[in-house]
Image (cartoon, rainbow, N blue to C red; front, side, top):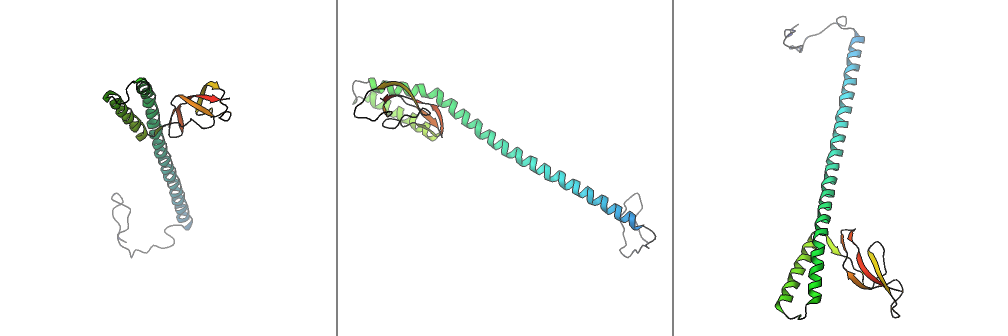
Length: 176
């Protein structure tokens, strides 16, 4: 029977080694097999749990990154919206619509709107639509015989939303 030294390894070198049934009791072989199966099952369970934990971590990280981007986009929009409001006031107050200064302000305003649109921020449509308290802030009511009740007749300040979330509701006048 050829074997390596016990200290080097317990690997059998010669494949033709035949051991008698008396050398290792069958109960011991079965108990070793059962122990190895139990260790295998335990290691497999640990591996599956580790993979599931990693997958959950990866999904949670992706979701957190997306939420952080959304919060940043909304925060930036909230800072830029007053600037856009001032551009609109400047455009409304301009006496000469053919003036180059007016045209320049219009161009800057359009650039700001395009920048917001590229960040998924869009104005809320309201004039001629039914009043929606989730999208509109009614600051005035007016009798309008030619308009149905509860219809927005004038937008006093533009409202904006990021994707489907309202950043700022439209300030509107509603027909009674």
